[in-house]
Length: 242
Image (cartoon, rainbow, N blue to C red; front, side, top):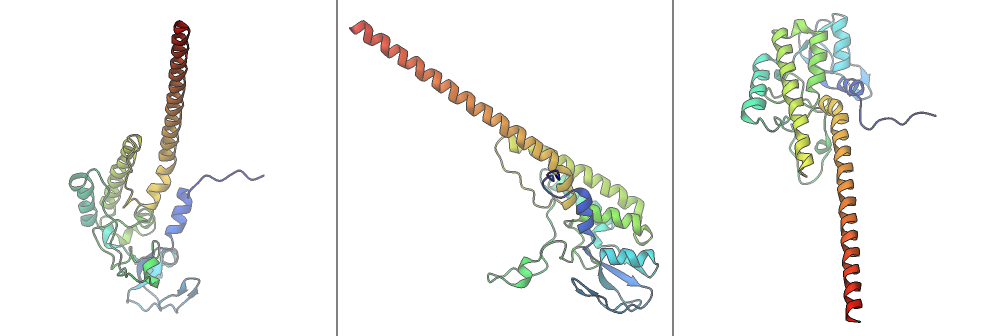
């Protein structure tokens, strides 16, 4: 009998889903269009840039058939601005996610329901000052697979580590709002951050739920005892009058 799976995605599963993110490549050789499940890819003609799924871009990179263009938010200047936003401008909340590239209409359309990883949030045309949903795992994958395509990879690695520590501290601090009965906003939190922090946050919520249940039971027991004491006093008074 199979054991029950834990709720949510594991970090390994999140990293696997991240490989569907679209990135920009500069091909070295010509490659015809490929018919994938998500639709046909662009014809690669060097040195014209083209968007490709991350998994295919990594394959071409390993074969030395293409270079990967780092997204603008992964450059040192952009990461420094985002880190300043996290620590100085909005130290109590997460930096906002990138704006939706398509207009949201009152009448639902096909583009209204597009969400990560199907948004072009990691291509060369993505906004520079916003962290996308898969920022952490995508940054680590690109640093490992194509550090030669990233300007100043050592600085980028340091900034990503600093951002991760700052934002995980905010995730841990959010449990204080849960204890006080408040609702913490997780807008802007990435997929890997949720996967890594889910066990901790769920454990805190379970502990708070048990504490609340014990307090409620103690309150009910106290009310019952007070009711019984009130009933005994009334019976004594009736006996004295008799």
